[in-house]
Length: 277
Image 1 (tube, rainbow, N blue to C red):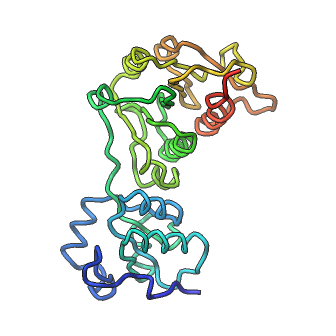
Image 2 (tube, helix red, strand yellow):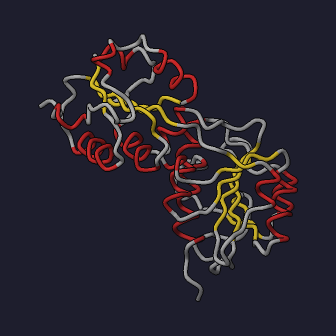
């Protein structure tokens, strides 16, 4: 079943005229939009991009099967309102986004805080901040962002160097969560944790060598900074030493560890959000 043509909001006054009427790839407007935005694929990620207000154009491949995910894209576009442009599938494939599910959005790149922006930030008394130490894989980074946003984190902190950027793959892996979540990139995680501690945050590091079992540990105080390292190296030594408490997830099978995103989800929902007492 093909999406309704009438859902495209193909009017002069919309945020873009129909891709069909412009002949597809040639307009100067198209080129400017593409240079200023990131293309992301996938129906859930595109729906979240529209909902966040950061989508500038939405392309749907002609002939795409109507599904709940595609209907959600259409509903969000109508609500925005934002024109949906129905294009040849080859135009979507040419963007090189892999399994795009026939839907692409051009979004404004997420604005990220630096150290100064972080220092100027305000936090609620029960704030939750997630700190990533050495997560370099974009999909793992995106999955961490998805868990952090779902848990209500107010900020995700990562490194400037040796860390995954907020790419199309990361946004897609986050199911659009990176477009809703504040992200800070800092040069020195230790100083950043110290800064947070100076603002009253209790820093908990997830470390497989810790003697405190996350399943039996008391509920942590808030505001809370939850620090997670990479699957391969874990927390770096100085970051580990800077934390107020280290906790571990006990492993009962033959697998020695979880990847960072899975471990973060376990600790977020099984420990960080645990009610006191």
